[in-house]
Image (cartoon, rainbow, N blue to C red; front, side, top):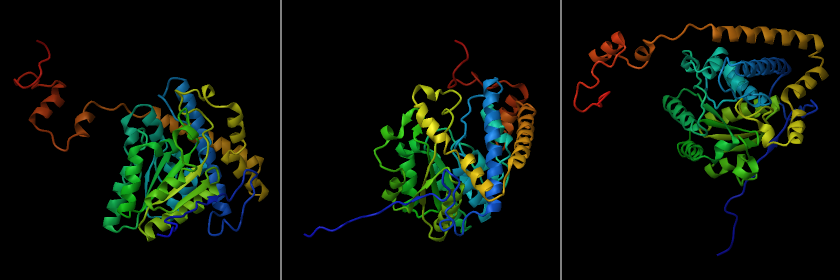
Length: 371
């Protein structure tokens, strides 16, 4: 029997704005305009300021562990704006380094702080905001995105779901189940991997043998793209095209965004113990804020005065967000009952009134408090 090629594919790497702030206008055709580039630069700066304030809150004992987004603002920012511009209220199913995408699509900024302060109300998403709470378990939430996309497809709403995760998540079984389900059921899901090369302290080269992360989507029949994840133009353009493809052809799409976390994994981590300082320094030169500002300055759209004004606004805004988070009224004990049960039976009403488990130890099958 003659040999033949059973399968062959390639994955394109897309960069529209390079580290020096030079734009490839041909690749950007139909993509991000200068007005929106200014807007995204402003929002990335606000997000970076927010990140720095959150770090200080943790260090001063006013908040629990926090994962900085520093260095990874462009990927979520670009596709987050594409979701906003589509105007369909597509679902966002985040990990924990996508603050900007969430803020752009309606999540109040104090919600993230409340989450990391240990206040469950941080996960109470406002009505009409199509965002799930941030997910801490690695790789489990893409399955939730599949469920949402399945429902939207069934209802014929024209909405998609975008789920974010890191490179480490692609070594988890739940991630592969999500990819297989989305592909088999032909669901409009965009899988957006922020490949920052570190699964906490495990380097990408050790935790997977794939030459790229994007190629993992090929096994499930997905169109796959790799982008410069520090490039807002590439994230917006490829994200916009991926959303259209996912909805129009009812199929999942995979995007690998090459980026780097400039901070520690979380405030409980010390990356100096496992990460080469020269590697960090090389990526600091690829900072999405620096290259975007270079581009805007080359187009006479930005200057030092605008920068100073922006930084002052960002500081004032984030200080107000902190006041909202720290000034929220304390939750009431009744909340345990009111937000858990649709209706209270007699026993629960007694528990709510007395704050005691009235029936405990009154039935033989129940465990007694003492013997």
